[in-house]
Length: 430
Ligand code: C2E
Ligand code: CA
Ligand code: CA
Image (cartoon, rainbow, N blue to C red; front, side, top):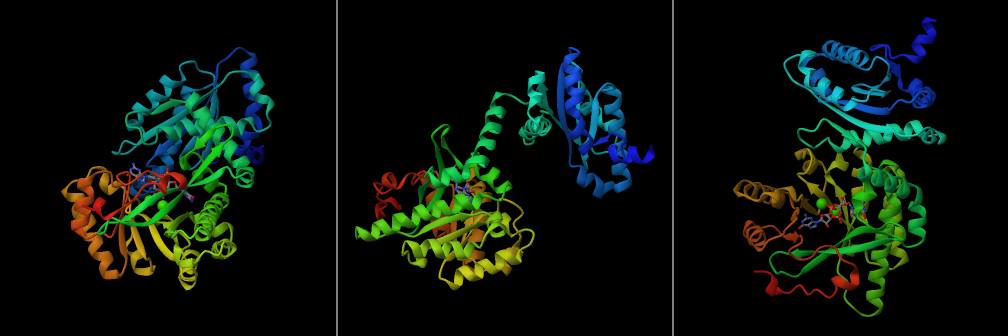
């Protein structure tokens, strides 16, 4: 009996464990619905639990988890409750006042812990009919939905519980759709490349375009990258989009050569997962050779956060890209935990400063941009500032000594046929 219990229960909290929940929740929900109950699937997360553990030790962390489980068991005594992992709890409950209960638990968190008051975030999903249980993946879907509701309020102050709603439903639908249809999208040419100009801040002339992905879907219309890039990154499939974007750009450069127009350089985005999914440098070489594009016209943008974790793979790729004459630009510098080590250990050609610095542009941010620009100069990197929206920003960046600017002041990303009509001349530079 004891052995059996260990298989289905979480040792610390004595709640069910995830696999037991996943295998049995459908039966539980089915019978609850048939007995005329409302059923809500919840996903609860303790924010900042890791630092709590670090600050007060694992023992205190475990005590908190046990206390919280006891509260859940008391509040939802008829529920089917489980611990997902570390600081996350899941469950199916029949209480009509489920939201009020979670809010009360959140308000009373100070009773369970040391001085800090940890935030609880709970996502709720209501299962409306037994028909929803016909799908063999239904429990994972219910959990995904309540998780999406929880994640939605992550950065919203003063909201601690949230119901999965129509807006999140649409997002979840698109998420499933894009992960299932990425191959079709590439084959059918639904992945389009939009171009945003980057301007030489001293001359006001076009320096290059950044190639940005858009998914023109026959069913969902124009999808911006936030609707597909993160989901494809999770599935390690974003390289399919990245190389489709690059291929479109190389095809365009080839076309321009054939009409004797002078092509401008193009930067393209690479995700960290690309380096784990395929031979990035090989693919770039293959595509640029196919369209006879000189390598010096291509700049690879790699985001700052890609430098975390196993870095050898990225370091080698940067070296290989340099060996074949492709510039490597660091994207989003300053958006995460910028480590100066990155600037010490990696050789970049351009540092793209994240647009957060221009969001509330004041003397402090101007000083930061100025100091980073000076440091980049000493290290031999050029500085690009993203998110330039006003003439004032442009002129102060010019006096600071930044090299390149990108932002809506010059243009938003557009299809090539539209962007080529915009002329960037000296007289734009003032
Ligand atoms: P990013 O690489 O930092 O690209 C710049 C984003 O900032 C673009 O959004 C652009 O439209 C927006 N932006 C440019 N200037 C301004 C401005 O002045 N103000 C404001 N508020 N925004 C500005 P977009 O095209 O929606 O792309 C968002 C992100 O999606 C990109 O950020 C990049 O991280 C990712 N992404 C886009 N295309 C690709 C791709 O082909 N591959 C990969 N892996 N990621 C991509
Ligand atoms: Ca970029
Ligand atoms: Ca960026």
